[in-house]
Image (cartoon, rainbow, N blue to C red; front, top):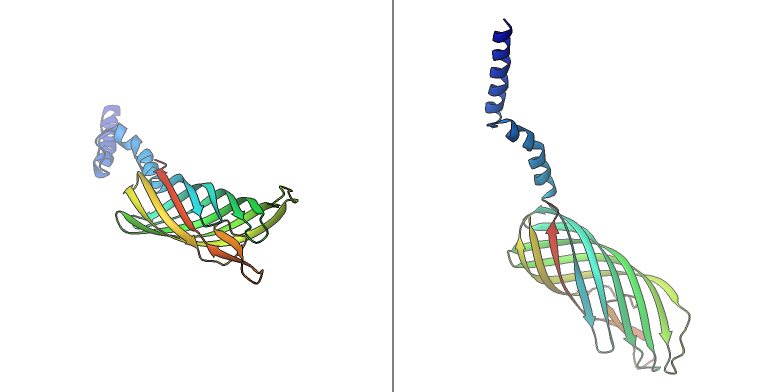
Length: 208
C-alpha cells in the first residue's frame, strides 16, 4: 500500500512538471529567478557628462540617472545633476561663478534604432557669486530655476542590455538663473539671457 501511494505521488509531481514545461527539479526552482531577471531587465542606471558653451560663458557637469524602459521605443526616468557654470559680465567687466544641484525627470523616444528625442524638466538649486573686475568677491547668493530641455541624439543601443549616446539640446525657458543660458546686458543696461547649446554624452546599463 505504501509503495502504491509513493508511486502515485511521484507520478502526480512528474505530471505537474510536464504540464508546466519543467523537465526536472532545477528548471522548476529556477523559474522565480528567471521571473526576477525578466522584471528587472527593464530597469537601467546610467549617467552622462554635459557641457554647454556660449560667447561669454558655459557650463560643465555630471548627470547620474535611473530609469525604466516601457518598451523598445520609450524610456522614462529621473536624473540628478551637479553643474558648474561661468558667465562673463561684459557690461561691468566682472564674472559670475555658479554651482547648480538639481533633479530632472525625463522621457526618451526612439523612433529608429540610432536616433532619440529627449525631453526633461529640471529644477535647479543655485549658489552663485559675483567677482568684479578688481577681483573682489561678493557674498554667495541662492536661488532656484526651472529648465525645460529638449534634445536630439545619436544612440548605440541593445534593448534590455546597454546603450551609449550623444545628444545636443537647449533650454526653452527664459530664466536668467538657468545654468544653460548665457546672461548679458543689452544696450539699455537690462539683464537678458540667451540659450546655449547643451552637449551630453553618456551610457545606460540595465540592472540585470
